[in-house]
Each structure stands twice: as C-alpha cells, then as structure tokens.
Length: 454
Image (cartoon, rainbow, N blue to C red; front, side, top):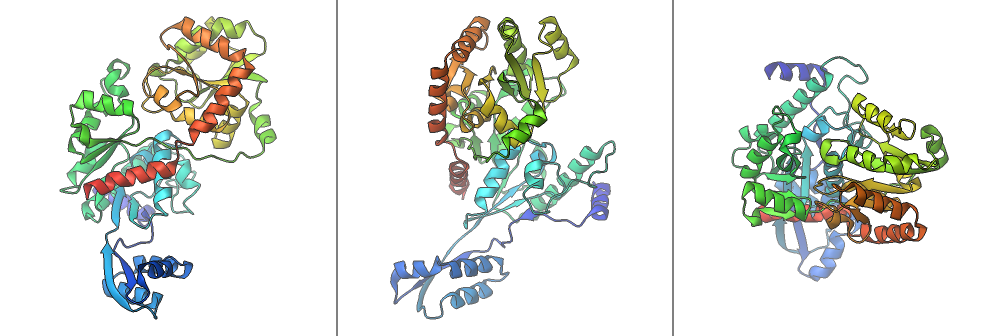
C-alpha cells in the first residue's frame, strides 16, 4: 500500500469529489421584531441563499456568525438555532469498476440530488475513473488514470489508488455515516465506531449459488457488511424479504427505497439510427446475458417464431459481444442473421426502446429491474417474467409470462406482437406508472434512512 501511495502522489495531487462545504452547522437567524415568517423570507431570498452557502464554506463558527449578521443588518437577532449537516462518505468501489450500470447510476443520481440539499454534505472518495456518468458531469474533477494510455493492469492499478484514497478518507473520520458503494469489507478496518449504511441490490448470489464459481466471494463479503450495518437499504420489497430470509436480520434494520428514473432527452434519431442500422421490426433485449437472466431459454423459445417471420429481428443492447457458445447456439437455431448485438450509450438505448416492437425481460430473478422504467420512459411495450421484483415495479403496465415455461413465453410474445391496441394500452399505463419512480423520491427516502441513525 505504501507503494500505491507513492505512485499516486507521483501521478496526481489528491482531489476528492466533494461539495465545497465544510460540514459545519448552519445557523438559523430569526428576527425578534419581524417574526418567524418574515425572517424566513429574508433567509430564503436569493441574496441570502448565497450568503448561507458562503457560511458553509467558512472555516470557523465565529466567522459564520459574522456572515449571517451581514445577511440582514436590520434584523434584531433574538435567537440563533443550529442544526447539524449530515456528512456522508461514499467510497470508490462501483465507480472504479463500472463504465455504465445500474449501481453507479444509482449513486450518481443520489449525489446529484444531494447537491441541492442544504442538510447533506457528501464526499465521494476517489480520483480516477472510467465511469461515464462521472467523467461527463464533474467538470474535470475526474479523469481516467493516465488518460487514453493503455497498458496491462491499468484498471487494477486505478482501483488500488482509489481504494487508498477511500481508506484515507475513512480513517480521517470526518463524516457521520459511511455508505460504501459495493460489498468489499475493507472499509471495516478503518470505520471504528462510525455507523455504516449498506444498499443491497439483490440476493442473486444467495438464490443461485450454483451460477457462481467458488472464487466468487460476493455473498460472503455482502453478509459481513450486512451484519455490521446500522441500516440496510433494499431497493425493493422482494429484496428486503430475501435479505431477512437469508441473513435472519430484524425487519426494522432493512428499509425499502425504490430506484428512480430521470428522463433523458434524445438527440437526433436519424443520426443514431444510421449508426446502428435498425431493422424495421425487432424485439429488444437489454443488459447482461448471465445464466439467471435466462437469455438462452428466451432465444430457444422464440427461435421458430422469429425464423418464421422474415421481418422480425432480435437486438441485444449492451452485455458485450456474443460469446462463441452463443454464436454456436444461434447457428444451431438458424438465427445467426436475425440476432444483433450493439454497445450503446444512453441516447442510442433510448432510441432502441422507442423503436422496438416490445422490450422483453425473461430473467429468473431481479432485485429491481431498472430497464422496465427505461422502457416506460421511452414508450416501449413491456413483456416481463412474473418473478422477483418485476411485478412490483411493472404493476399493471406489462404483459407477464412464466420464464421457466417456453410455451408461456411464446404465447405472450404472439399476443403482444399481433395486437397494436394492447401495445398502445401497455405504453400508456407505463407512462403513468413511471411517475411513481423519481430519483428525488429515492434521495428523500435515503436521507430519511440517514436521519434515522443520528
């Protein structure tokens, strides 16, 4: 670790991603003459908003008093109240591993919401990242280690440097709550008596252990952190029930906070469509193709249906290039020219949803199912498994099937693709249901979890 420290100092000065606030108390100033309402109006004026922000940046409480005194010289100050700003520390883990993805999107959106919250001061303890959400929005605060230079072990080195930065921040103890972004228990060595909040996204490793090799220690690491956490956030009721079932924790420790969605304006559809050459009619599959995602069963179930129609294709967005085993399966099913894979950014993905005949989610289990909300937002009909959290998220805005029954999947596909009225009805219900899921609601509920600890 000393070597990592020295190397890091040679590469760059430490630059932690945090708001320019000191975390010191905010002073509420009320005027004895004007009364609470008028004083509140003064303190929430644009002028005093800036002064209040300046007060956060001041290093000493006496100087804070002076800043607020200047905020309204005419005020006859009768009382000064203080409320503590919560200081939350997020570690590096998910931003050191994900380019895109649901978990990094979750923490990115939380921090975006907390930027606007005067009661929360957060810090993200890392310097280098290849995560697109951070790189595209942090005004140069983040960059990839050594830019575009490629070499073996680069991502591992970047991870170790970021972990060193996170360790330093944890040891400094200048926070109220630690909220790690994934399951590595390294944080426990330095946290001492500070409370820890852990978000658990699913219990896939516990439900399907046979799908993961013996070298995969995710389940073990997750349990260690869960047993030390002051509070656990589950992103769905399904995940909460599974956490309690596997870990035997008290129900009061686990709070359900659903994920949100932020609508993205699409850029020129014509330009994007030309780049990825969309067929006229296609079924959309999104994300990884792990065993529990049930991708192979989906392809086998639809093989005859797709090959019987000259106008129908399957597009797989994300998940990486097809493996040799997948390509062999397509060839065996005579689907090689009917299934396409493409790596996409947010704009491309939005267009893929919007132009699809429908989006299918054949998974055997999901802790939430963020692609369902993406489909809702982009007016795409949704066809999903009736398992896990998917009915909880999709509600009445989807058509369902049994993912273990090929005939059930075939029947649902046939019903949806041949019924324009049904597709329009599902789209309308999806748009209405999406209003239940916003990142603002997610952030507010997460803040409530933090406050319940203090």
